[in-house]
Length: 79
Image (tube, rainbow, N blue to C red; front, side):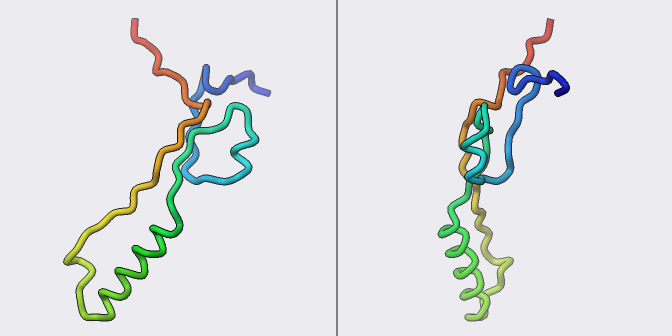
C-alpha cells in the first residue's frame, strides 16, 4: 500500500523459517536451523553437565543455514 517494492526499495530477511514463507512473492530470504542438530546439542550439553562437566569448559555454536530468497536486493552504489 505504501508503494515500497521488495527487493527494489527494501530487502527482507526472516530470522526463522516457516512454510508460509514459501507462498510469498518474492519468497523471503531466511535462516533455518536443523531441529535434530539443536536437540542433539541440548542433549549433549545436558548429559555432560549430569556427568559433572562444566558447560563453560566447552563452547560450541549451532549456526543456522542461510536460505536465499528473492527478497534481498543489491546495495545501492554511492555516487
